[in-house]
Length: 378
Ligand code: SAH
Ligand code: SF4
Image 1 (tube, rainbow, N blue to C red):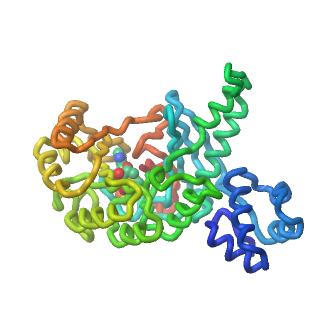
Image 2: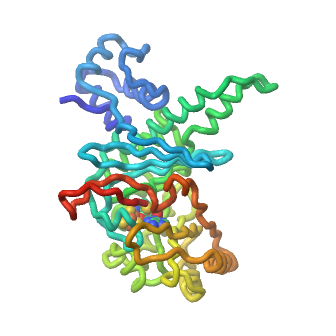
Image 3: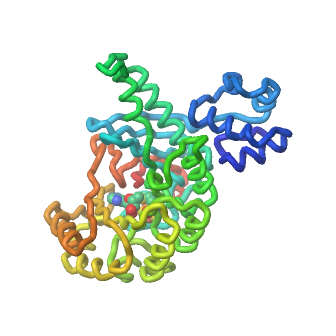
């Protein structure tokens, strides 16, 4: 059986190589070739013995999802639509900023958790992404960003460094947020293996602080993530009490707020950052009043945290509306005055529908078996 080497972290590669009587250090070499040199051709892997290269080409491949569309917005945000077979599509979004480049990565096709304000949730669950499909989003982003930088004219600055080189470093992925389509902790093993590759010094070497998993609050999986691969954590809170959260984020009926906050406290014992980021989608007239803000402030009193307010991004047939800029400002100011660091998420790439909740992965809609539809996903 042919294996895709993008499915393996270092441990997986060591195991795979051992079956061919190859030494563990070969795993490090392979990781470097695959993820750092972005080299999919075994024949070009010059420091591997010829016999190993032959064995690898007979047993394995290095393949990533095919790019169906590639759009760049006016603000530099770049969005790729990737094919993951059976007419399923997923999207990744690259958000360049002055001193970092963040890639928003998907973990599932669709999502089973059915949050009321989320188009992916409305669409239902199709399937988990494989490790190769998750890490392939990063592999592809770096490759395509590097190619774009290589195509820049080579001009020299006074210090002798080419502008293309500066551009190149500015346009590589430096941060990951697992905030694309799907619930990462519902695809636990594949996500953890992909995280291992992201933070491995022989692969992407990203610090755990620069890799963020966003979850709607699957408590047992949060505890397992803490033990297996503690990275930065964002929790989708969205409501200050159980009755409202039960409605907006139905998984709350199973894992209510009090237990969720206790899980956040436990997570912080091993987390690379000393705070949890709470995401809070701003829904007009639903969760955005001054009394909601007061309730929220009381609720998180004992949890070291920061808030990220996300203006709701609408999609067809949604019952919700985005809060007004004025209510978002008042809400933010109340949290800030209570000592909570609060940011309002900028809507990036909205001219190419790349903002949170606007991604348009094509998903096979299981509720309408004969049609394939364009849906919006977060
Ligand atoms: N499933 C995970 C991660 C993906 S969603 C989670 O729920 O945390 C990333 C963020 O986008 C979450 O906070 C999610 O609640 C939010 N989101 C979903 N739909 C949105 C929409 N239509 N507008 C704004 N934010 C949305
Ligand atoms: Fe799933 Fe996250 Fe959307 Fe909820 S918000 S349905 S958990 S992707």
